[in-house]
Amino acid sequence: MGLAQFLQWNVSLFLLILSRLAGMIMLAPVFGARGVPGMVKLGLAVGLSIILYPLIKASNPVIPETLLLYAALVAKETFVGLVIGFVIYSLTAILQGAGQLIDFQMGFTMGNLIDPVYGMQSPMMGNFQLILATMLLLATNAHHYLIAAMVKSYAYIPVSPTALPQGIDFYVKLVSAVFSLSVQLALPVIGALFIADLGVGLLSRAVPQLNIFTVVFPVKIIFGFVVLFLSMAFFGEAINNLFNSNMAWILQLYKGWKP
Image (cartoon, rainbow, N blue to C red; front, top):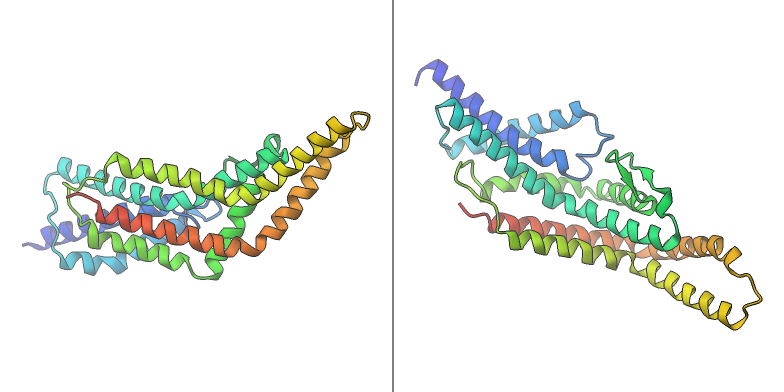
């Protein structure tokens, strides 16, 4: 192998590694946030690619020599990274879904803000929970496990143009689990406000002379904040369980990847 071919093979392998890691970092929580500068994301992807390069090179992967096949392999590696990033992103989706349900019950549906983390409209409570969960992940160094999960992908999914993702049933179960966990996370606030609504309804029927609906909305918001504040004592444990479930989904995705 000549010097030119040697350099071409090594640069091609490095770009393949970078493509997968960039796809994962683009969607992963913490790293893929809009507030993280693009150069930081790129630097993280390049840094991890440099660290992983000797390990991937030791497996001596087959790299196509033709430009068309190589471009298809780069697209495939990017797709692999995006699929893994999508599964990791489900943690964020759970928090956003729970916040949407809480906002609907508290009457904040029309007051959605622009999410500073991902730069889109998001529920107020979901935005609050997402920022709080991000702080917890950073404080407990859980983002190191996210990086480890990205690196572990090469142990199950080698650089290969024939690798295919899991069947559609895996993603259907993933989406259903996201909805289910969102409801469970929001259930304390939703349940308390639902009981309060029942009490207000019964009181208005029992004493129709009272114009209770003029004060019920601000009281309902205050009551919702009180319940949310009381439930914060269990928020850390809930995030820990969600993170463990997320890691289990990633491992299930890796083991079910069909070559």
